[in-house]
Image (cartoon, rainbow, N blue to C red; front, side, top):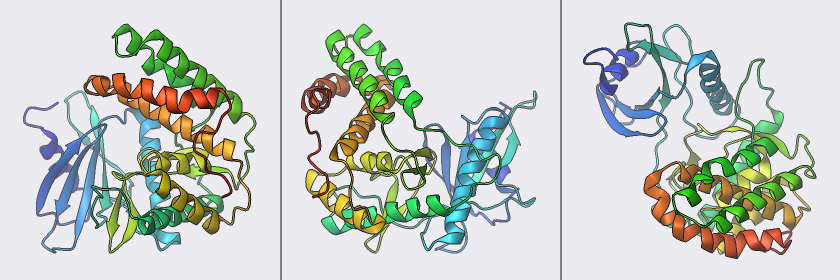
Length: 327
């Protein structure tokens, strides 16, 4: 990286390439991306800038641009408030800033800021229903929208499930969990993969999903949830999207959510075992994500055995997990 080119310097350089008069950058955080809030002279006009350090090569850039294409379509085709992209002065969805004499660059995107507050509590039953209505709206759009040629996003399928034990395999070696607990996780992944082969793949069951719509990835404005952070969006079963949100809801709110979602999607029948499959998959994916962070290992050492006993063992024995179906 060039001397003096810290994250803020890169952000300021990138901002020159967008038709935006930014007055101040506010650092928000760092994960795969580094994010800034771009404030302008207008109190109500703000933007979100992302520095995509994980986007390496043309394929990754295409993946980022595809996310923005869906956001752009959602903003144009629906009444949803989403972090739609701001195109650069040369009409690009992304821009790049050279950070090294070798020509190494960082992909940068700019989004319209979505106003609202993150919840620091369990949603009310009404908020859970509104969240379900929001998800149904996303799914209806995905069913009708024709993605352009070259559109590239991750795929959440059988191969994805079978990749999940990989990050978890180190946990017994680090004495985080027992070998027996890991074996339960591995058996669960294989059973999910087998079950997925029996899931119907059609326009009303499979398409673009947010895949991570939980309390850190939506904000509430005047009682209405608004989705943010589409960085994990990709192709998958719509019920997997539902299950990901279930992870972060109380049993009562899961029922509220499911009732509203079924009503919005006009679903007359859904096999309760399908919901169980996707819910257990969502748990397993969350464990695999957390396993990559050593700071989470202490909590995983307690959480995985409990969850394995209360959810995975029931699933492996073909017993109910969620207790939600057509009711």
